[in-house]
Length: 121
Image (cartoon, rainbow, N blue to C red; front, side, top):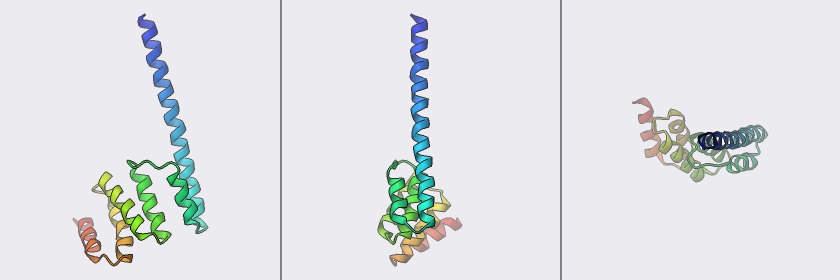
């Protein structure tokens, strides 16, 4: 019976690792495709690639979507993605530098100043 339990635990672990690897590969492929679309200025499709694998608790995906949304002229969406990235990693200088772009485009100078000051702390 003990051997059966051990085998079951190993099987479940293997399946979990295997499915994680497949998901990770999908995310990597989506990022690669988004960079390809970005190079050609096709921000809509670059965004679609990341959204297709989007996880709200992914710092990297929120950061990427913040940048792509900014480049696409979607400043409010961009700021929201950068805010999510900052919520996940409050000390992130990349997210703070990133949020300054849509904030300045929207004329939100208080937010620009606040984020620059936090970067300098």
